Length: 487
View 1 (cartoon, rainbow, N blue to C red):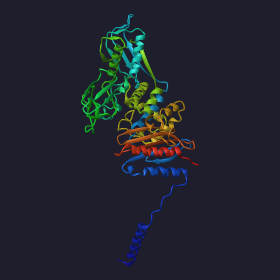
View 2 (view 1 turned 120 degrees about the vertical axis):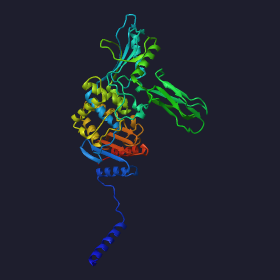
View 3 (view 1 turned 135 degrees about the horizontal axis):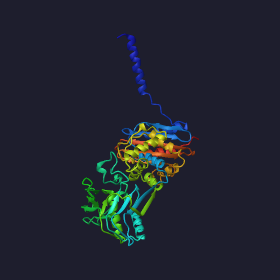
View 4 (view 1 turned 180 degrees about the vertical axis):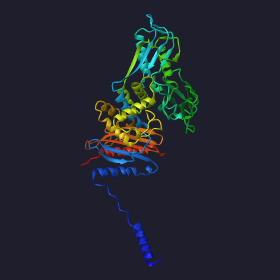
């Protein structure tokens, strides 16, 4: 080899050795406030928990229209319950904040002696929040007009919506869980029953199971045991959902002296559940019922006897603060009815949501949603799209106050009640959470220490570590945004 070539190689080797041995230059925190904020957020995201995890974030100043931070903001992520931001925004724009959800009780014939000849109908128009208390209120209305007996059946009319009980892509084995209660225009108690399991006082003592409301619509198989020490067989509370039965099962072991374990379990055929509860409440009030609960359709000439009204403004606050899936799905199908007629469907409702978001200037070809609640893993959204939506809603002066009020407040209520306490974000940041297995998201609004208004979206997915680690990272970023100052 020629000597000049050897000399060049020796120089290169020497240079590499020098670079390798040199002390790395320490990166200092920038003095510019915006650059410092970016440095701080990057530091949080440099944690090893994010090595196998996708994180997409965007933070924008509403006052300055300035991007303060951005990472993977155009990457499609699974939004989970951040989908409810789209549903609730579209509902306010399409239905209007004065929309009322009705539930009616009707009859074909009412005699002067207070007897209803033929069936008594209960018809739902999509209210997701009706409870046994509201049923009792309608029974009281019937008694107030002198109803004494019903000769026919109690007919549940859920024809306002289609008969698809679940959203596209929902997990089949989650059917008994309250997060995937059947969607119906006629719903009561979130289409669930509350199950309370009380252990015996000592090993071998009977395990007591209470069901609320007390109803013949469900039956119980209780094989659970009270044990003195470690419960080797986990306590399981579920329903024979694969068999399409309203049979609750309680099995496994529970330690003596432990607190009562409570669960909400779904029922099969929620409209029939409503009719059964109505029959039982009528009989308990002294109104005789000869017929049985059944499913049918109200006749055009049926006469209204009692009603319950529920305003959308109350419902939408519960939808977002509690992240209630049934509220979101019923709202989606109500949007479908408002824009297309009966029966309402999720597919048509989603078409209306997309049209409405397009009117806000959002490119609807850049995301994909299949339900109203975010329970489906098929949904795909970007942080940029969510920031665009949240920004566009601030320009809708008539409905924005309600939309903003519906979001959980950090450290105060809803799904953020226990988060960001003791930071500048407490009582300040408002955001919609979103959680599924391996997914944690938070999108919303926050005001800085200077009074500057920010909008943000943080989407994190594909992790197997505890979700609290990712929520902690979001909370740290939320606190940074709340404490941000340009001075």
